[in-house]
Structure formats: structure tokens, C-alpha cells
Image 1 (cartoon, rainbow, N blue to C red):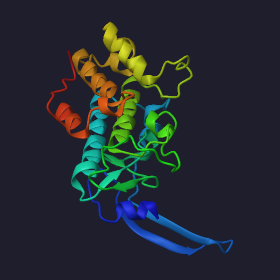
Image 2 (image 1 turned 120 degrees about the horizontal axis):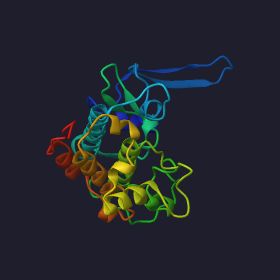
Image 3 (image 1 turned 30 degrees about the horizontal axis):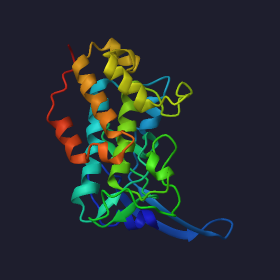
Length: 246
């Protein structure tokens, strides 16, 4: 029902499209309710990022990064209501036949008033929203959901797409995480050492990768006040020419 409430008045090329709803009785005589979406031929982003038999080049990943940013900008700024997705992660990003990304799974989404949208300090007794590794740290402290929470998830998603490493990768222990891993690489000038090795065979522009890693790091800062908002991300992504070669 939360998903229906969130989706009933929103339309965007980078969001899943609901075809119809089904309400019936299953074979055991229980209530059966489901939403039917457009079929996405290329599955979800998770299956591409961590597959042994298929991969995404940098141009494709930048396209997906931009698509997801456009979806968030619509949800946060342009859809009438302010909608916080609350569970942005690769398995909830679906890819159509043209590899255009569509954000899906609004089961945890929350509709906020404009005054609530960027406020993440109030205590809340509601359930923790999101997925371990992608949910912002303030949600674990019981703070209200906010657009800055989505921005944290977006930053982690972006860093995962660039490094090929999940935020719950076993290498991240002892206080090290995907954010600090990327932040240290930026500070040490060794971004090429942490990016997905598939990029190194493409002769990509190092400055392009550095720019993208910076966006991911700034979006995934621990403090909500230190994160980029989606408008700034859109400006960075679409105001920069990402050359594919050095």
C-alpha cells in the first residue's frame, strides 16, 4: 500500500512504470495483491555490477549514474509531493532494453511535506528504513528519513559502481568503509588503484574518474549537513564533460 501511495501520481522516464494492479485469492485461499510493472529486459544493476560473465563499461555506468540522479531530482523536487525513496541500491535499479535505468521498489518510500524534506535531526520511533551498507548512519540512530538520506545511498551506490566493491565487502572492517576507502584514495592521489579494473583496459580519463569519485564521497559524508543535495549533483554530472579517453 505504501508503494501504491508513492507511485500513484508520479511519472518519469527513470522510474518504474506501473501497468496494472492485481487483487485476487491465491491457491491457498489467501488474499493476493500485486503490482505489475513494465518488464525490464536487462534485469537489475546488481546483476551487472557483480557478474562474472557480463560487465558495464564506463560510458554505460555514467549513463546509469545520470539516470538515477534524474529520478531522485524528480522525487525530491519536481513531482508535487516530496518523496524519499529510502532504499536506493543496485537491486532496486532496473535496466531496460536500451540500458536506461529505472528506479523501482517504493515499498519503504515516504511522502514528506516540503518543510520535512531536508530535516534529519528529529528522533523517530519508526522502523529503520533501508538496507545495511546503503542506509545512512542517522537512520540507525532513529532519526527521521530525509532527502539527505537518499543522497547518502546515492553516494554509496555511485562509489560501488566505480570501484566494483559492495559496501559490505569483507575488506571493509576495522572502521574502514566504502566512503573512507574512496576518500583516502582521493587524498593520496591514487584513484586509479581503487576503481573497477575493467576501466583500466578502456584507457579512460583519470580526471573523469576523480570527478565522479568526488561526487560519491561528498554525497556519502557521515553528517547529513555535509552531503551534496540532488540539485548540486545534477549540476556536477551534466555540467562536466566526461571524456572516455585520456
